[in-house]
Length: 290
Image (cartoon, rainbow, N blue to C red):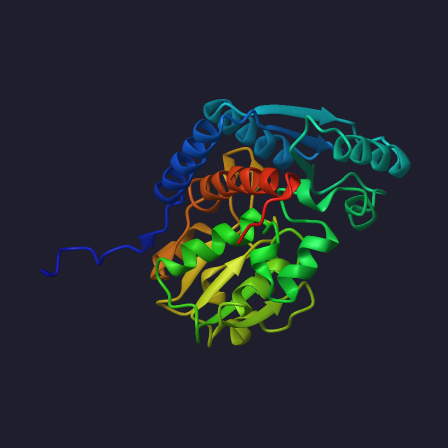
Protein backbone atom coordinates (compact mmCIF):
# COMPACT_ATOMS: atom_id res chain seq x y z
CA UNK A 1 0.00 0.00 0.00
CA UNK A 2 1.42 3.40 -0.98
CA UNK A 3 1.72 6.24 1.49
CA UNK A 4 -1.16 8.07 -0.16
CA UNK A 5 -3.67 5.26 0.27
CA UNK A 6 -6.07 5.26 3.20
CA UNK A 7 -6.18 2.25 5.49
CA UNK A 8 -9.18 -0.02 4.95
CA UNK A 9 -12.26 0.91 6.92
CA UNK A 10 -14.16 -1.40 9.26
CA UNK A 11 -16.27 -4.23 7.94
CA UNK A 12 -19.89 -3.14 7.88
CA UNK A 13 -22.11 -5.86 9.28
CA UNK A 14 -25.25 -5.39 7.22
CA UNK A 15 -28.44 -7.07 8.30
CA UNK A 16 -30.12 -6.97 4.89
CA UNK A 17 -28.36 -9.95 3.23
CA UNK A 18 -29.20 -12.29 6.11
CA UNK A 19 -32.68 -10.78 6.37
CA UNK A 20 -33.34 -11.44 2.68
CA UNK A 21 -32.51 -15.12 3.15
CA UNK A 22 -34.79 -15.43 6.19
CA UNK A 23 -37.58 -13.51 4.44
CA UNK A 24 -37.49 -15.81 1.43
CA UNK A 25 -37.80 -18.81 3.74
CA UNK A 26 -40.73 -17.22 5.59
CA UNK A 27 -42.53 -16.30 2.37
CA UNK A 28 -42.03 -19.83 1.07
CA UNK A 29 -43.35 -21.27 4.33
CA UNK A 30 -46.49 -19.13 4.17
CA UNK A 31 -47.19 -20.10 0.56
CA UNK A 32 -46.45 -23.79 0.93
CA UNK A 33 -48.68 -24.17 3.98
CA UNK A 34 -51.44 -21.93 2.64
CA UNK A 35 -51.36 -19.84 5.82
CA UNK A 36 -53.13 -16.55 6.54
CA UNK A 37 -51.06 -15.17 9.42
CA UNK A 38 -52.27 -12.23 11.45
CA UNK A 39 -50.25 -10.27 13.95
CA UNK A 40 -51.08 -7.32 16.19
CA UNK A 41 -48.74 -4.66 17.60
CA UNK A 42 -49.96 -3.11 20.85
CA UNK A 43 -48.65 0.42 21.42
CA UNK A 44 -49.18 2.03 24.83
CA UNK A 45 -46.87 5.05 24.65
CA UNK A 46 -46.01 8.10 22.58
CA UNK A 47 -42.37 7.07 22.10
CA UNK A 48 -41.09 8.26 18.68
CA UNK A 49 -38.64 5.37 18.25
CA UNK A 50 -41.50 2.92 18.78
CA UNK A 51 -43.48 4.59 16.00
CA UNK A 52 -40.53 4.17 13.61
CA UNK A 53 -40.10 0.51 14.52
CA UNK A 54 -43.81 -0.36 14.22
CA UNK A 55 -44.09 1.19 10.77
CA UNK A 56 -41.08 -0.83 9.66
CA UNK A 57 -42.83 -4.01 10.82
CA UNK A 58 -46.00 -3.03 8.98
CA UNK A 59 -44.13 -2.56 5.70
CA UNK A 60 -42.45 -5.95 6.04
CA UNK A 61 -45.75 -7.64 6.86
CA UNK A 62 -47.32 -6.19 3.72
CA UNK A 63 -44.50 -7.60 1.60
CA UNK A 64 -45.02 -11.05 3.10
CA UNK A 65 -48.79 -11.12 2.88
CA UNK A 66 -49.22 -11.04 6.65
CA UNK A 67 -52.17 -9.13 8.09
CA UNK A 68 -50.70 -6.54 10.46
CA UNK A 69 -52.85 -4.53 12.88
CA UNK A 70 -51.69 -1.71 15.15
CA UNK A 71 -53.57 -1.22 18.43
CA UNK A 72 -52.66 2.32 19.48
CA UNK A 73 -53.95 2.51 23.03
CA UNK A 74 -52.36 5.87 23.85
CA UNK A 75 -50.05 6.89 26.66
CA UNK A 76 -52.96 7.46 29.04
CA UNK A 77 -54.27 3.90 29.18
CA UNK A 78 -54.46 2.21 32.57
CA UNK A 79 -52.62 -0.96 33.54
CA UNK A 80 -55.90 -2.87 33.84
CA UNK A 81 -57.05 -1.74 30.39
CA UNK A 82 -53.73 -2.84 28.90
CA UNK A 83 -54.06 -6.25 30.55
CA UNK A 84 -57.59 -6.65 29.21
CA UNK A 85 -56.50 -5.89 25.65
CA UNK A 86 -53.60 -8.35 25.80
CA UNK A 87 -55.87 -11.06 27.17
CA UNK A 88 -58.45 -10.39 24.46
CA UNK A 89 -55.82 -10.74 21.72
CA UNK A 90 -54.33 -13.83 23.37
CA UNK A 91 -57.76 -15.50 23.31
CA UNK A 92 -58.60 -14.45 19.73
CA UNK A 93 -58.11 -17.46 17.46
CA UNK A 94 -57.72 -15.19 14.43
CA UNK A 95 -54.61 -13.58 15.94
CA UNK A 96 -51.40 -15.62 15.65
CA UNK A 97 -48.83 -13.18 17.00
CA UNK A 98 -49.00 -10.40 19.61
CA UNK A 99 -46.32 -7.77 20.19
CA UNK A 100 -46.25 -5.42 23.16
CA UNK A 101 -44.15 -2.50 21.99
CA UNK A 102 -41.66 -1.25 24.58
CA UNK A 103 -41.03 1.09 26.25
CA UNK A 104 -44.50 1.56 27.67
CA UNK A 105 -45.74 4.95 28.82
CA UNK A 106 -44.57 6.07 32.28
CA UNK A 107 -46.61 4.43 35.01
CA UNK A 108 -47.22 1.21 33.09
CA UNK A 109 -45.47 -1.98 34.19
CA UNK A 110 -44.19 -4.14 31.31
CA UNK A 111 -43.42 -7.08 33.60
CA UNK A 112 -47.02 -7.25 34.77
CA UNK A 113 -48.36 -6.74 31.26
CA UNK A 114 -46.45 -9.65 29.75
CA UNK A 115 -48.08 -11.99 32.27
CA UNK A 116 -51.31 -11.42 30.34
CA UNK A 117 -49.89 -12.54 26.98
CA UNK A 118 -50.12 -16.12 25.70
CA UNK A 119 -46.52 -17.42 25.47
CA UNK A 120 -47.31 -19.23 22.19
CA UNK A 121 -48.32 -15.89 20.62
CA UNK A 122 -45.41 -13.95 22.11
CA UNK A 123 -43.45 -13.54 18.87
CA UNK A 124 -41.00 -11.12 20.46
CA UNK A 125 -40.11 -13.55 23.25
CA UNK A 126 -40.86 -11.20 26.14
CA UNK A 127 -43.09 -13.31 28.37
CA UNK A 128 -41.59 -14.82 31.52
CA UNK A 129 -42.30 -18.30 30.14
CA UNK A 130 -40.21 -17.77 27.01
CA UNK A 131 -37.44 -15.90 28.83
CA UNK A 132 -37.24 -18.64 31.46
CA UNK A 133 -36.71 -21.27 28.76
CA UNK A 134 -33.89 -19.19 27.27
CA UNK A 135 -32.29 -18.68 30.70
CA UNK A 136 -32.50 -22.43 31.33
CA UNK A 137 -30.70 -23.16 28.07
CA UNK A 138 -33.84 -24.66 26.50
CA UNK A 139 -33.93 -22.37 23.47
CA UNK A 140 -35.38 -25.06 21.19
CA UNK A 141 -38.65 -24.89 23.13
CA UNK A 142 -38.95 -21.10 23.21
CA UNK A 143 -39.88 -18.20 21.01
CA UNK A 144 -36.59 -16.28 21.07
CA UNK A 145 -36.45 -12.47 21.22
CA UNK A 146 -35.68 -11.36 17.63
CA UNK A 147 -33.31 -8.48 18.42
CA UNK A 148 -30.91 -10.55 20.57
CA UNK A 149 -31.12 -13.31 17.98
CA UNK A 150 -30.25 -10.81 15.24
CA UNK A 151 -27.26 -9.62 17.23
CA UNK A 152 -26.08 -13.19 17.74
CA UNK A 153 -26.36 -13.89 14.01
CA UNK A 154 -24.30 -10.79 13.17
CA UNK A 155 -21.64 -11.56 15.77
CA UNK A 156 -21.24 -15.02 14.23
CA UNK A 157 -20.32 -13.34 10.94
CA UNK A 158 -17.02 -12.19 12.49
CA UNK A 159 -16.49 -14.19 15.69
CA UNK A 160 -16.47 -17.76 16.91
CA UNK A 161 -18.87 -17.28 19.81
CA UNK A 162 -17.52 -20.16 21.86
CA UNK A 163 -14.75 -18.72 24.01
CA UNK A 164 -15.22 -15.11 22.87
CA UNK A 165 -15.42 -12.28 25.38
CA UNK A 166 -18.43 -10.08 24.71
CA UNK A 167 -19.63 -7.05 26.64
CA UNK A 168 -23.23 -5.87 26.59
CA UNK A 169 -24.01 -2.28 27.54
CA UNK A 170 -27.62 -2.08 28.65
CA UNK A 171 -29.46 -4.68 30.76
CA UNK A 172 -32.87 -4.06 29.18
CA UNK A 173 -35.46 -6.83 29.04
CA UNK A 174 -35.80 -6.71 25.24
CA UNK A 175 -32.09 -6.95 24.37
CA UNK A 176 -29.43 -7.00 27.07
CA UNK A 177 -30.79 -9.54 29.54
CA UNK A 178 -31.93 -12.22 27.08
CA UNK A 179 -28.83 -11.68 24.93
CA UNK A 180 -26.66 -12.40 27.96
CA UNK A 181 -28.23 -15.84 28.30
CA UNK A 182 -28.30 -16.48 24.56
CA UNK A 183 -24.59 -15.76 24.15
CA UNK A 184 -23.77 -17.79 27.23
CA UNK A 185 -25.76 -20.68 25.72
CA UNK A 186 -23.28 -20.58 22.81
CA UNK A 187 -20.20 -20.63 25.03
CA UNK A 188 -19.33 -16.93 25.11
CA UNK A 189 -18.04 -15.21 28.24
CA UNK A 190 -20.40 -12.29 28.81
CA UNK A 191 -19.94 -9.07 30.77
CA UNK A 192 -23.11 -7.04 31.35
CA UNK A 193 -22.70 -3.31 31.98
CA UNK A 194 -25.25 -0.88 33.36
CA UNK A 195 -25.68 2.78 34.22
CA UNK A 196 -23.57 2.37 37.37
CA UNK A 197 -20.56 0.73 35.70
CA UNK A 198 -17.40 2.65 36.57
CA UNK A 199 -14.40 3.16 34.27
CA UNK A 200 -16.07 1.74 31.18
CA UNK A 201 -12.87 1.79 29.14
CA UNK A 202 -11.13 -0.58 31.57
CA UNK A 203 -14.10 -2.94 31.63
CA UNK A 204 -14.30 -3.01 27.82
CA UNK A 205 -10.54 -3.32 27.18
CA UNK A 206 -10.33 -7.15 27.27
CA UNK A 207 -13.50 -7.70 25.23
CA UNK A 208 -13.55 -9.09 21.69
CA UNK A 209 -16.89 -7.44 20.95
CA UNK A 210 -19.12 -4.79 22.46
CA UNK A 211 -22.90 -4.69 22.08
CA UNK A 212 -24.58 -1.41 22.96
CA UNK A 213 -28.36 -1.30 23.39
CA UNK A 214 -29.40 1.58 25.60
CA UNK A 215 -31.14 4.14 23.41
CA UNK A 216 -28.79 7.05 24.09
CA UNK A 217 -27.01 8.66 21.15
CA UNK A 218 -23.19 8.87 21.39
CA UNK A 219 -23.14 6.75 24.56
CA UNK A 220 -20.30 4.56 23.26
CA UNK A 221 -17.30 6.66 22.23
CA UNK A 222 -13.85 5.95 20.82
CA UNK A 223 -12.26 6.60 24.20
CA UNK A 224 -14.08 3.56 25.57
CA UNK A 225 -12.64 1.13 23.00
CA UNK A 226 -9.39 -0.28 21.72
CA UNK A 227 -8.52 -0.84 18.05
CA UNK A 228 -9.79 -4.00 16.42
CA UNK A 229 -12.85 -4.68 18.53
CA UNK A 230 -16.26 -5.51 17.03
CA UNK A 231 -19.21 -3.22 17.81
CA UNK A 232 -22.86 -4.18 17.45
CA UNK A 233 -25.00 -1.06 17.77
CA UNK A 234 -28.60 -1.93 18.62
CA UNK A 235 -29.58 1.56 19.70
CA UNK A 236 -32.39 3.49 18.02
CA UNK A 237 -32.48 7.24 18.58
CA UNK A 238 -34.67 9.63 16.60
CA UNK A 239 -32.80 12.93 16.13
CA UNK A 240 -33.17 16.00 13.93
CA UNK A 241 -30.56 14.45 11.63
CA UNK A 242 -32.43 11.14 11.38
CA UNK A 243 -32.26 7.77 13.14
CA UNK A 244 -28.88 7.11 14.78
CA UNK A 245 -27.50 4.44 17.07
CA UNK A 246 -25.80 4.52 20.46
CA UNK A 247 -22.23 4.56 19.10
CA UNK A 248 -20.63 7.89 18.21
CA UNK A 249 -19.60 8.26 14.55
CA UNK A 250 -15.87 8.25 15.34
CA UNK A 251 -16.13 4.71 16.73
CA UNK A 252 -16.19 3.37 13.16
CA UNK A 253 -12.63 4.54 12.52
CA UNK A 254 -11.32 2.41 15.38
CA UNK A 255 -13.09 -0.94 15.22
CA UNK A 256 -12.64 -3.92 12.91
CA UNK A 257 -16.36 -4.41 12.29
CA UNK A 258 -19.52 -2.48 13.15
CA UNK A 259 -23.24 -2.50 12.43
CA UNK A 260 -24.55 0.70 10.82
CA UNK A 261 -27.71 2.38 12.10
CA UNK A 262 -29.96 2.08 10.24
CA UNK A 263 -29.17 -1.02 8.20
CA UNK A 264 -27.53 -3.30 10.74
CA UNK A 265 -29.49 -5.06 13.47
CA UNK A 266 -32.90 -3.71 12.44
CA UNK A 267 -33.56 -5.44 9.09
CA UNK A 268 -32.58 -8.85 10.40
CA UNK A 269 -34.60 -8.37 13.60
CA UNK A 270 -37.71 -7.74 11.53
CA UNK A 271 -37.17 -10.85 9.41
CA UNK A 272 -36.59 -13.06 12.46
CA UNK A 273 -39.76 -11.75 14.07
CA UNK A 274 -41.78 -13.02 11.10
CA UNK A 275 -39.92 -16.31 11.30
CA UNK A 276 -41.10 -16.46 14.92
CA UNK A 277 -44.65 -15.93 13.68
CA UNK A 278 -44.53 -19.16 11.68
CA UNK A 279 -43.04 -20.98 14.66
CA UNK A 280 -45.77 -19.55 16.89
CA UNK A 281 -48.48 -20.83 14.55
CA UNK A 282 -47.02 -24.33 14.81
CA UNK A 283 -46.97 -24.12 18.60
CA UNK A 284 -50.59 -22.97 18.64
CA UNK A 285 -51.58 -26.01 16.59
CA UNK A 286 -49.82 -28.26 19.06
CA UNK A 287 -47.05 -29.26 16.67
CA UNK A 288 -43.63 -30.27 17.95
CA UNK A 289 -40.94 -27.70 17.11
CA UNK A 290 -37.18 -27.81 17.49
